[in-house]
Image 1: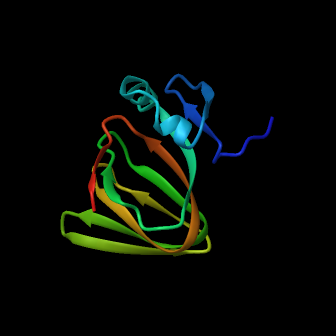
Image 2: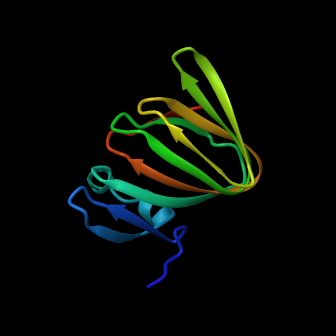
Length: 126
């Protein structure tokens, strides 16, 4: 069966099972303990962005795969040696190292696919 990754996220559990979950706001408004449970496996999401991200985030449990499907943006990575900007336009991917704070500056409406082991994810305002 086909699915739209913006509307349906896929949770890849460490035991190899895949579970479809309601995506978008339905997922992000789940209670904290449920979100944390889904952080103990790989979450595959597609998210559309029309504006700069309002926050920084980091994932201490694993690297994150971020794939630009369409649009134009700059990922800003807070590396130990300083800020590094990675420009993505049209299509392109980057692996964000574990524990690195990151945000994005959106230059044109964009869609991204993420594969994240989200346990312990932290956020802070830009």
